[in-house]
Length: 388
Image (cartoon, rainbow, N blue to C red):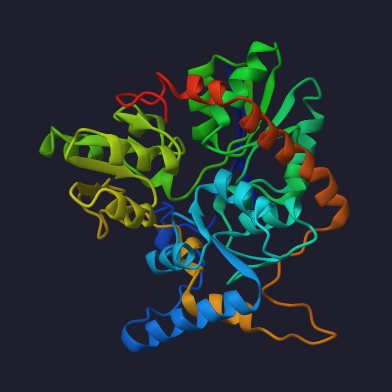
């Protein structure tokens, strides 16, 4: 990734790493990110693949763990076969604790790496190992190490959306479910924070906790596209709708929200909220689970572009979209050879994994031992529904 600019502002150091695949006008759009989107399947072929996948999962002693942002058919397959659909924190917990010797991770590369780091003795497979993340791409390990070296007095906190090598340099990993609680706890202990890679999430955490934070300047190309002006106009058309937003969104969008939280917190808000309409500002893949759990409520996708745009609601990660049923079947059906590395298997360098596991374990211990801190951190931050 090419460093495009570097600036500083009070309490918040910035190193800018922009995703370089821009359109002719200089704007970044998920539709133009490089990704191989699988062929859409319908009818008999789709049903046959689903049946085959169920047999393969059983035969391989494998379990399917999927993120809320992947295709709805894959989410349903996970539930139907004893697997799990969750945000990245719960995916990490589930994969570590499940007895299956093979984990199939439907998500993006850092999720597969996290599963392998936590369960090095298990086989971890993914439908496409090139399914990555703009936050991961925008935080190269060598550059991040130099950033850490320049600020040795700070506790290094990294978001889950980073490579194994970046995690190996961190003191603690966080997800959007626990970031507020973890940073608040560190702040209460007098520690100064170096946070990476999402600038919007970092700013949100800093505002909510008051922590002294120095932030890497990355962003998610999906959440960065939501437009506050368009959201305000949509709110005016739906004045009774509750707005639920992921903290990776921009400040202008977050300021318009009724609920700010992780994917699981957003689902909780829709299921338990009293409103009948919800404007949802995150990857559209989450709508599948929301519709299942709250079938009587109207879900409206938050706008990602202005009035002249050809796509007003195209918030879907191009790399999450690389997860398809054919890829799932192929990763489990692959026989391999003695000389070729399995093109579907996740490998993490042992030395890097041995270092990276410490920051992940620290997060898992904190969340297991401090449920009251998790609830307290969310209370007041997640408006209208209390703890989430």
